Amino acid sequence: MTKKSENSPEKRGDRRGFIRGAGVSAAVLGAGLATPAISQNLKEWTVVSAFGKTGLLGRALRDICSAVSSATDERLIFRIYDAGQLVAPYKVLDAVSKGEAQMGFGAPYYWETKVPALRFLAAQPFGMTGMELNAWLYHGDGLQLTNRIYNALDVKFLPLGNTGNQMGGWFNKAIDSADDLKGLRFRMPGLGGEILKSFGTEVKSLPGSEVQKNMTAGLLDGTEWIGPAADLAAGFYKLAKYYYYPGWHEPGTLLDGMINLGEWEGLTADDRRIITRLSAASNYSLLNRFSVSNGYAMETLLSAHRVDLRAFPDNLLTVLRRRTDEMLPELAHQEKASRVLYDEMLRFRNLQGAWSHFGDGSFVRARQL
Image (cartoon, rainbow, N blue to C red; front, side):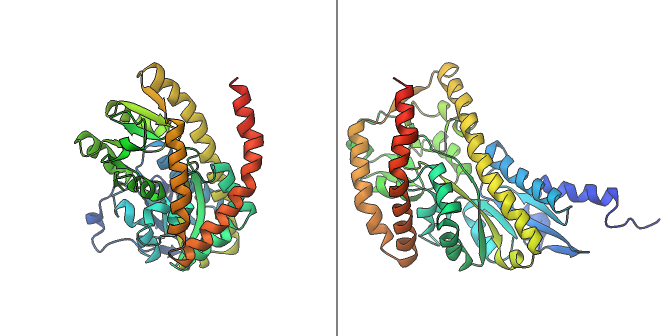
């Protein structure tokens, strides 16, 4: 039988299969995580995700991998492993840093125990919106500062999306004041969780894949997740009585694409440009997808499922804001990387804040009159 060439249609079809991801357990791999196979200038990368396959996050990862593979004429192809298939969700950064996987996808506050500064990058209570974060990343010092942190871990950072403003969360009791936060068993990662702890909340930092089972088992009194689209898909309306807004803790949540630095530097300059441009497109696209999907999902939650939607009282938001202004500088100044990142993000937020207030903020208020 004649040996098929590496670029035959059959071989190209096999490589396309990598992009769709793999339902292969770690045990099948035997010796551990795959290393990139390089043949005739082709690279096959293992991609590990902190998120599940379904929903906007799972689709976004597959979309960018498919786009990069196509744009590089399949010189770069991907085998995707979703949360828990190959590594635990909170171990994605470690796998990429060590070169056990070539690429990863997650949220920076998932790595806060390893690098505390990254929780300031993911989302800050009363911080920047998704649009403001993108302005800082691409037109301020954002990418330079964040890559300084990731590069020290042998990782190249690229923004791969933003959820936009999130919801305040699902609760099994009414939240009327700060007193109602005491003793509450609540899932919230990142800096928002640190703020809640100061009010006596028992905060759990769990990956999304573990939230549902903890809610079902009665181990949590409530949880925040993302917003209407993701929350509807997760079925949280079946598990909690009240749905609160706004997401004071996550006005814009940055998602990180991570590439092992050695692998990144081993790419051609053209391929690095392709990945950089497509990651920016993915970043903006996912923010827009969340916006439109949240609109439809909110309508479904309210009309079909009769969700009890409630606003956090202004007096509670005021207390949360004051506590945030007290605690964030203290947390940031515990180590240099956090301080540098926080100070620059605060400067940019204050710069953008006036325009956001007089621009979108005042217009949305006027539109609702």
